[in-house]
Length: 412
Image (cartoon, rainbow, N blue to C red; front, side):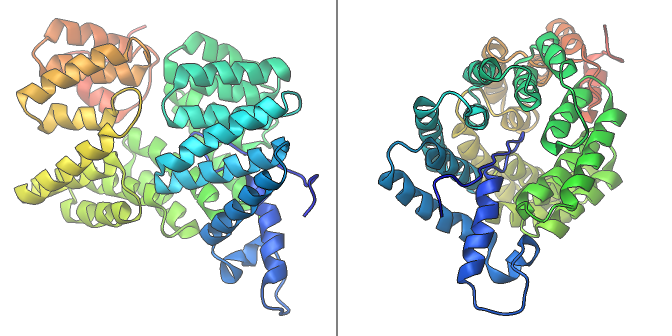
């Protein structure tokens, strides 16, 4: 393999990165597979070699490359992308930290023509909820290669997370989107979804799914992510049948996708199918621990009258949520507000007040509004809920909270 191999990184909200490394891996592993008449293409890869095994093997390969060539920015970026991809699927904090270190090393070695590594570093920082620093890195990427659509979309997405909606709108509107780049389409979809244009957001995601489904060079877990994103949109909109269908679509592509299984568990919980929520949630958490899914299983066990199991999964959720760096895990906060003690509700209120000082987006405002309401601060809750609905976000949770608090429709 030569030092000048073609390299491509794709980053998403919940990213799978180093697609180019994956494609090169297919060829490399195919050469070592038993000889047969089977075409050596990514579509036949699951028969030849498990994708997670390929990634682990390539991590070893690129680790050796970085030791052999201390001056290679490319190899460091490749290894960072692979480690980041694995961290997203295993929850490994160690892999995430190594990916960040390697991406920084790559940028230190090469500033120019290294915009994809800037994007990777910004995505790593987003994964650990360092959104302000991620914004700085994304802005640096845009300054080195101005008006690059992927840079603008990443910057806009980070600004959505921070609640800087005017800045995000300016960056998204500056994108010349040709409909071909599905990663940019997914980020545009998030913007449209947050600002109340859910039908447009849905169209962008459906279009992205069509495009990735025709690709033979993408990991299954990345293709599944687009189905998962559509499922999340439909679930937030209260379209449970559509959400169920989208999550099932993810499992068709990637049968052990913990995100999709967790999504199906939440659909089941919303429908009152408690036992199905438990079964799906336990299957998901056996693959990868996720605080939100642990909370879903706890709530389902509680509805079934099994207080011991509900407490067990609730405690596990707390342990998992506390490992999240930065601001409070919002699903955990909401869980404590609805199922916790008075002392826990007070704690969540204090945390939510602090969190909006650094990440003042509509979802943070919704958590704070609900914390105020659950602590009896009705006037403050109403004022904060009005802020939370200012972007006209169509989310079933927002609607439920707003009605309880006394805000009947978006204001603004």
